[in-house]
Length: 69
Image 1 (tube, rainbow, N blue to C red):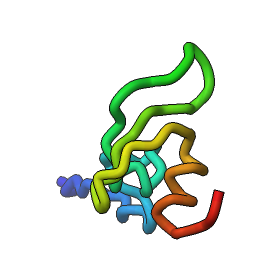
Image 2 (cartoon, one colour):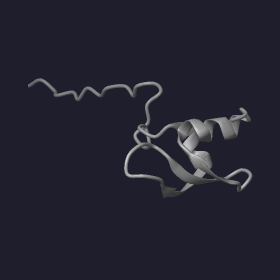
Image 3 (cartoon, one colour):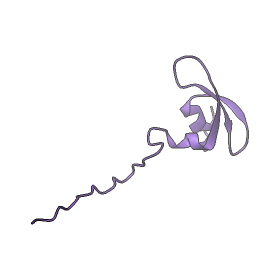
Image 4 (cartoon, one colour):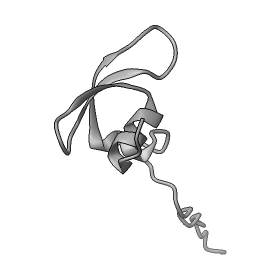
């Protein structure tokens, strides 16, 4: 009688089972309020400096990396 072996797929590099669809810099801010019915604009609070700003992911990125707006 042949034994059955289960073949497991190796985990793919760079993927995670949680928050894989969320850009990584959102982890450094707290989303307060969604602005508008469409688009990606949010009112957010920076978890590092506690400053409250409005904007999309690119605004979060600029704030955290110190890129002037």
